[in-house]
Each structure stands twice: as C-alpha cells, then as structure tokens.
Image (cartoon, helix red, strand yellow):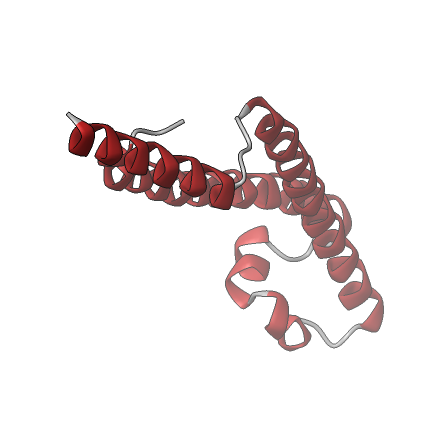
Length: 129
C-alpha cells in the first residue's frame, strides 16, 4: 500500500511507465510490421520495390498498379504483416493482464474508511489525554 504522502510521486511514475510502454510497443510493432511486409512484398510483387509500397501506404496501393492480381498480392502481404502485429499486441496485453495479479488489490472505499476511523481514534485519544 502506498503511504498517503507519496501518492503524487507514485502517480507520476505510473504515468511515465504508461507512456514508456506505449512508445516501446509502438517501436516493436513497427519493427514487426516492416520485417513481415518487406519479405512478403519481395517474394510476391517482384517488379516493385518495398520502398515504393511502404511510401504509398495502405490507403494508396491502387495508384501503384493497374493489375488486380498484383494489388491482391500486395494486400495479402499487408494483411499478414498487420496480423502479426495484432498477435504481438494480444500477447503483450495478455502478459500485462497476468502481471496485474502480482499487485495488491484493495477496495479504495474500505481503505478510506479505515483511515478515517484511525484518524478519528487518534483524535479522540489526544482529546482524552
């Protein structure tokens, strides 16, 4: 349990860890995406470079080719790369969920009531003395 005077420090650390986790997972996701997309494009769409397809982005793939077959193959490569990113995010979220069971879970209302009773008892003891 966090002492009352340290709550602001702990919340700052929690926010920092949250932001750092988001930045790290974004970097990992982009690495997974590119490492799956580039080989997929090289093996299927040989007349195009991976840089051209990445620069075009997922929304502008139709401008790269007039061939429906090539467009379909490029979309399949994108689909496989995005699928692998979602698998990573699902596993990371599951591990974070399992890790949350290692922390102490308390009802905030109960803790507040216990503190109020303890403060009231201390105040009454001071008045008697």
